[in-house]
Length: 233
Image (cartoon, rainbow, N blue to C red):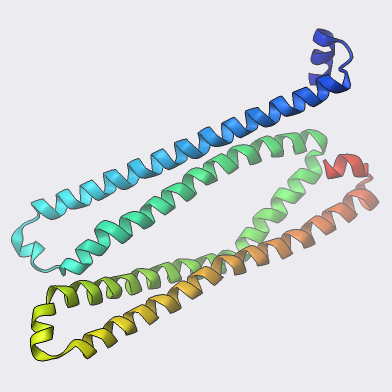
């Protein structure tokens, strides 16, 4: 239908017209990607600003009895590190929404070509997601470990700097240096585990997706008889 509409307006498209349209579409896609990235970053920053301001306002207005129960390092860690991680979560959520919009269009086109095969692939994808649920839970647990390690690091740095005069008076510099080193090593180890977790999930998903696509391709061509050209589209 799209080709027929173009042909009705310009006649049979020439090679220069087709290449020009390709360049135009690519430029439009780039502009939309730029606008999307700019919008996502702006929304993420607004969320971080609002959350940080709410938390700081709550800290300022809390009763002194409650406020005195908290370590200043924990409050600083919440105002900086936790707000930053909330911003990362917001960015991921907004990116996910954009990806779902694209996936919806692709799924619609796939349904137009073969509803049965598309339904089979979606069902297999849902099954693969359930199978990998355990890895996602482990990733969430690592996020909690990262929060604990960050909190210890902020405590080690903030409290050592705040009490530096006393530390120097008693000659306890080495103990505080080792405390900072230990907190740094703990944070490093957690970061290494956290960095490896999404890679493991992605590799598992890629392998599972390759197996599913191979089975679907074989079944479609040899069993259902769908033309390879349609299947690959």
